[in-house]
Length: 404
Image (cartoon, rainbow, N blue to C red; front, side, top):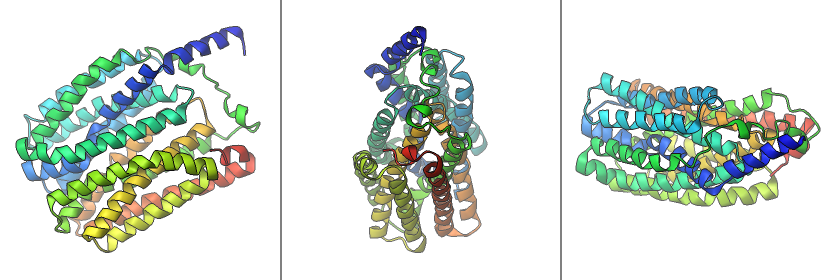
């Protein structure tokens, strides 16, 4: 490594690894993804306040996610070329305008368009935040922090949104999002302005842990697995509240269960770290996929208060647990972070279509059993993909396959 490269990398350390830069990236990512985090309560409020049917609810849930997907692709193309702070300022402004406009226009077609625009703004923030964390040297630790905070915010939204909706309807939730984005303006100044320093980070880092060059199809296959997981997450999370209503569970029981289940996942990071250190990446991840699939089949056959609590709790735990290992796997394959920066795009792609597909399944009379089967198909597909990935890594780079 040349002296100039070493100097640049030290500069990268001082900029991207500063605690306030990490804090800003985490906050911007969480607020940018806040609509998806609170999607069950938002869908329920749209149904209760504006009376949309299940197919319309599916499209409205997909609208924000479509915007996030498009924004993540745009961010991946622009984050290396434009000032990161500028991109986030644009995203915040667009999100505020779109969420406020959502309190004014309530007809389906107009609201659908506005929600896509809202997703564009939030998705731009989310993607730039994740790309910034991917530029740090302790990527796995920082993504664990992001997921930990996401769970805490998730619980807050699930616990407070029913009260907000009861008092002010869905407009109150949209104004909540406006306020969150306004507060985010303060933290943007802590973000690194340029990605040039981060791009210097160990482009050949794979060779530091393995002498074998990893085929490029492996990280792309991992991103495909992320997309498959979010077929499950997108459909499940959009309709889990409606599933409880369909099973004649009370509103308080549903909101408290979802909030409690989300809080339970706070242990996911610690357990994932412990299991990763003891068993590596592959075995815990495959086991988590098997457990999540079992939970989906449980809900497909019968929904009772007990099964609802178990399923919501275990699903939330597995969701976070799987995300930690997915990001860890991608990070071990490529420490430069360029593939990790594409994770929001992989998530957003299937997040944007799976709620609409779930809504179509419901509109065709297949019920929530059909939605759970859709979710299970996504999870099983991801499990098969990772089985292929780990089998190949064990052949060509066992140190990466067994890394913690």
